[in-house]
Length: 233
Ligand SMILES: O=c1ccn([C@@H]2O[C@H](COP(=O)(O)O)[C@@H](O)[C@H]2O)c(=O)[nH]1
Image (cartoon, rainbow, N blue to C red):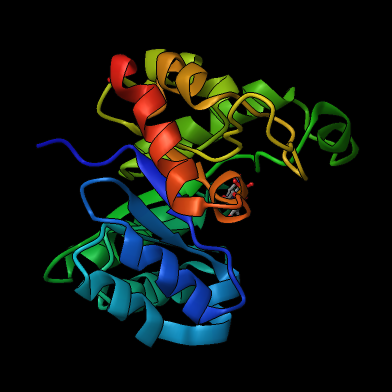
């Protein structure tokens, strides 16, 4: 059976609130993403608890440091039993290669993906950073280095998914945050698509946080999104 397409971003500052939602879910319906907020507040124990419930857990800590430090951090993350971890592609080729090598030394290596350009970034914010390429070209360039470094995929926006599938092939995993069902609040995201549009564009996994977690009934919000995707799978 194929893996669930939706990864719920558990961005809560209240562990019980997060667990109350998780209790309503099941690992066939969605995976779970733990990011910097919950990991900093509740640590590896919380991650292991979710893994123990049978979920695909994406530990989204976006490591970005010197190669040796990132490699060791990846090894430590793998020991938690998670399904997917990530680094920043802008940490460079050596950092990504060493990270992947470190995972080869573990018993059950998670997928390793790299963040290209954050989905909160728009062309204006991007131009301030002084890159020579435009935003889409920079994403494509970082995806190329990521693939050449032997990683399993990238975090990108669904705006870039079609181009990256053509460039990197169908097995290179595209994980896309910035997913907003029609009518939901954009918040701080810039490069957004609806869940259906993102799947059609080639996204493999849809990261969805606030449209679910801030909904009056988060479980129902997830089910509604999931049902809306059935004809697109
Ligand atoms: O480029 C990126 C990389 C990671 N994220 C993370 O995804 C979720 C999105 O949450 P929403 O509430 O659906 O906006 C969040 O945890 C981010 O840290 C991202 O948005 N963009």
